[in-house]
Image 1: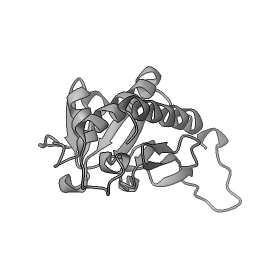
Image 2: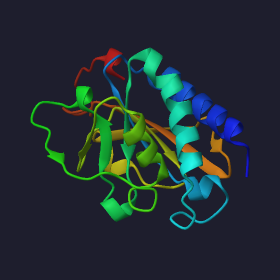
Image 3: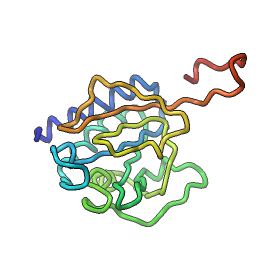
Image 4: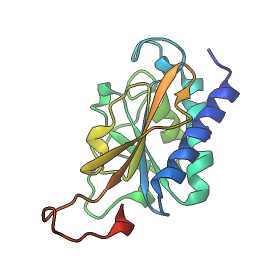
Length: 184
């Protein structure tokens, strides 16, 4: 396994590249699904590593926080892929659920986010503006409707593959309709 410092740095680089390539603005939300097992070279869900989850959390927030972009941490399937997010990022009408992630029930990354956030809350779902899938965690259910994959140069964290994604408004009205290029 890579050193924790290397894992943190790889996470920072991937998040920074996502920020740059997806044109995120302050207040936008990035969903991150992260398998510490895959990062460590094991099969997803078999080798939860809190120190790896913490390193990835630190690396991603190092990139997102200065940009004013919120992190949403996806829990593992044992918590039905619930979301941990800062209360300040909640949209009106969002319904909070009562759960606290643990390394083997929620995942090491979501646990690190819960501990690292100032005022964490859990939600059943969210519609994020962009995302990072670290280790095939399937974040698609938590993205806005039209997701566009981003091929990242920084596409590995430890042994795990990283896929970036941004979203855009959907086109409506057919081929003769006008659309706003600034939204793409």
